[in-house]
Length: 121
Ligand code: SF4
Image (cartoon, rainbow, N blue to C red):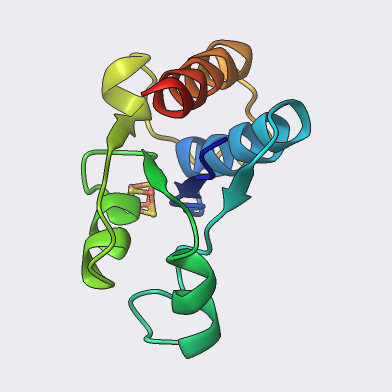
């Protein structure tokens, strides 16, 4: 079974926090998934890059259109097989409410479906 690396942007806002919560929940349900650390990649932290490159396919989960998760993967020359931008896909406005769980179940469902799709390809 393919290993799927999922990288949340983990930004300090509602949609960044949602990205983190969604990945944590997805990992509970889906085998062979890996939480890729967003910050360590562009910082060039060797161990994090090594771990980050250990998956077969990658999902970038961005809070907003700045797309930090996608850019972090690209900075380490890791392919982006699927990309989500939470504000655009779920029509959620960016706020400072870190406790928000707005549409979290839907985001988790969509990531789990993407994991299934990538593992079948
Ligand atoms: S993608 Fe948007 S929400 Fe996420 S860390 Fe970057 S600026 Fe913040």
